Amino acid sequence: MTATFPARALRALTLVLTAGAAGLALADDDENKRLNINHPEYRSECGSCHIAFPPALLGAESWRAMMAGLDKHFGSDASLDAETSAVITKFLVANAARRDTAGSDGRPQLRISDTPWFRKEHRDGHDGITPGIFRSAAVKSAANCAACHRNAAEGDFSERDIRIPKNGARS
Ligand code: HEC
Ligand code: HEC
Image (cartoon, rainbow, N blue to C red):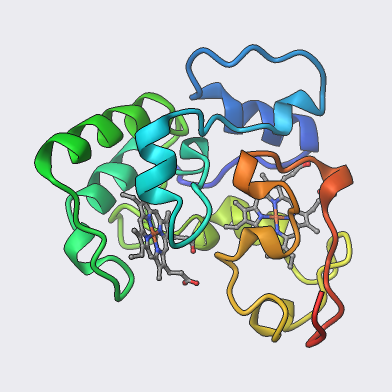
């Protein structure tokens, strides 16, 4: 099993991303870019420090591993009580990418922004991505999806809503 997403074409990518999302009614191409984050506890508990990332962008094992280590969450303590944690884990796993997102060491990857799919889709030169943009003052981190995807907080990553800030400048 390989961990790479077959991102040959936008359509293929979109199909893969949404394939694991249960209960998504997909109307047209643009609707396909809307990734389910429709869960109140998830949005409030996991959408306070950063956007509520779409579950479909990581595999189930990655989400399980992340939820098992919330006390040491990227340098933050994001601990939850056992009940809330169980409810959120269930939502994440049910909507996870169908393929697993393991790193080269075989361990589940915890960052969407480290997955082969993400790196390919956001490589230098692709659709306005300029070298260093992710570390620029305006973006700061690849995890800061909303710096470019203006409706990321709503789970919407449609191309028409992407605005890439000028390198180093404020958006
Ligand atoms: C106390 C603040 C806080 C809370 C609450 C929190 N996180 Fe995070 N999270 C962070 C920080 C800080 C990072 C690292 C951001 C960066 O690298 O720019 C992060 C990164 C992430 C990433 C990796 C982003 C990427 O692709 O680089 C994921 C996925 C994630 N969090 C999921 C969750 C989930 C799921 C929850 C709820 C259980 C949650 N977070 C709750 C602070 C938080
Ligand atoms: C520096 C700007 C920038 C940041 C930050 C960024 N992206 Fe993107 N993203 C882009 C660009 C540009 C594309 C390519 C759009 C295309 O294919 O035409 C893209 C494509 C995508 C796509 C595919 C959209 C499509 O139409 O097929 C998804 C999903 C996505 N990004 C998710 C994320 C997530 C999740 C994060 C944060 C963890 C993120 N992006 C951070 C600029 C960014």
